[in-house]
Image 1: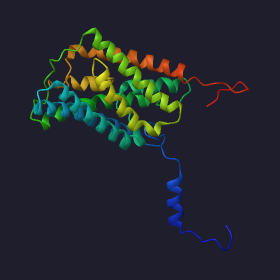
Image 2 (image 1 turned 30 degrees about the vertical axis):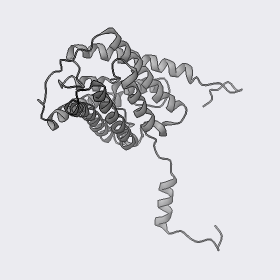
Image 3 (image 1 turned 180 degrees about the horizontal axis):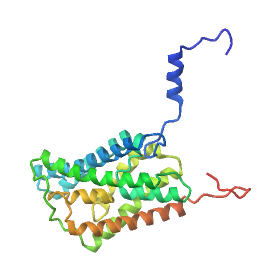
Image 4 (image 1 turned 90 degrees about the vertical axis):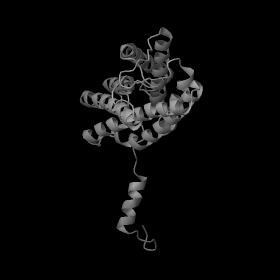
Length: 264
């Protein structure tokens, strides 16, 4: 700095430093965020997501008898709601809201990548499940439905289970593909858009989330799933997560430099 250059006030300098310092991207787990804050974000985020899915389903069935319009209303609300939740809570917890995503991140961390450790995994998953159940109960309460009524909506057909493998594999491929290519800043739009599309192109309407699947068993409404169908859905979602990680490893394979080290 020369004598002729203006001197910035300390508060201005600190503001500039804060604005220019690296900020955690949505979908990335910030290392310095207290674990209790991340657990709260996962619980609240998953609860809000399930409340959006179940609540919009109830509202849709009250407004129209056309099943296509019901699904359109349900998927549209989910797209906007999920995008907002990822943008809001991504910088806190990574906005997983999904045990399949958390397990996939834990697995990549064990193999030398970035992600949650075993302790964080043990906190995230129960928080997500508790939040999903709370979100279903909240949605039922808002619409005057029984707070807990097991769903009678059977979803055990083989084609629906295949749909869950496809939906979950695509979700994992998207999230970890964005991470591999350093584009997690697009996660709010990309993930929400994928889920909205998967509502329509998968036979299962894309649950793609073990916690959400459990939560939706607690409501006998449009978005519900019979408890007997839950284990099959979760099993297929976990298989889909494995398939998704395998696709990430193949499609986004890291090349080697001339020295033999892996490139970014």
